[in-house]
Length: 272
Image 1 (cartoon, rainbow, N blue to C red):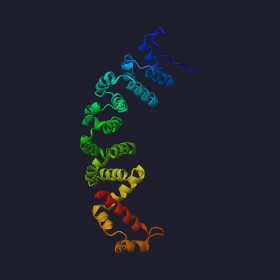
Image 2 (image 1 turned 60 degrees about the vertical axis):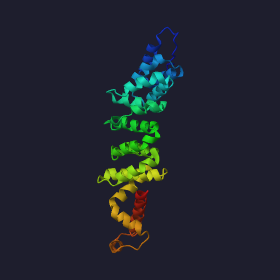
Image 3 (image 1 turned 180 degrees about the horizontal axis):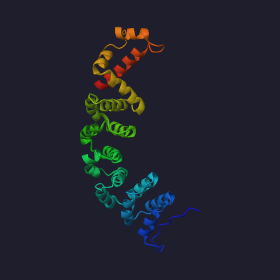
Image 4 (image 1 turned 45 degrees about the horizontal axis):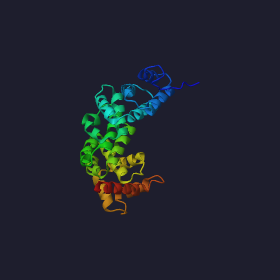
C-alpha cells in the first residue's frame, strides 16, 4: 500500500523535517505527494526545503510540483531566495529557479535575467532563461531582447532551436528586422534557423520541421537566385532547367517549378 504523506505540525515530528524526509524518499510518488501537500498547506517554513530539493530532484513531475508549491508561498518571501539560487553553481538549481520565476510571473524579476543567463553554456538553463525573459520583458525592451536572442540562432539540437524559435515568435513583430539580418548570415545554420523562425512568425500554424526544410532550400538557392525567381513567378524555364528536364527521371520535371515557388516564399519572407 502506498504511503500517505501527511504534513501536520501537530503530528509530533518537526514540520520541516517531515517534509524533507518525504521529499527525499526513494519512491517518486511519495515525493510528488509530499510536494503537493506542501503546496496545499503553504508555510514559509517550507521555503528552504523546497528550494533545495528543486536543485537535486531527478523527476520532472516532482520538480514541477515543487515549483508549484513555491508559487503558493508569499512572493516577498520566495523571490529573494530564488534570486540567490540564480547564482548557484548547480545548473539544475539555476534552471529550476528560472522555471519557478516564470510560474510566479512577477515582472520585477526581469532585471535578474542577465545576458550571461541567456547565453548559459548549459542548454537547459539557456532555454529556460529564454522563456522567462520573453514572459517578463517590458514592452520597450523587447527589441533589445530580440537582438540578444538572435545571437543564439543555430545553437544546439532540434529541441534547443525550437525553444529559441518559439521565444522569438512570442516576442512578436519586433523580431522581424533582427531575423532579417540573421537570415543573411554566411553561416548556413544561422541563416536557416533565422528563415525558419521567420516562416513560423508569419504563419504560426507551420510546423517547425517543415519550416526548417523550407528554409534549407531557400538558403541553398542563395539570395540572388531567390530574388530572380520571385521577380518572374511562373516564367518559362531557363535553358538550364529545360536541359535538366530533358534528362530527368519521371517525376523530376516539376523540380524547377518547385524551386521557383520556394524562392518566391524566400523573397517574400525577406521583404517582410
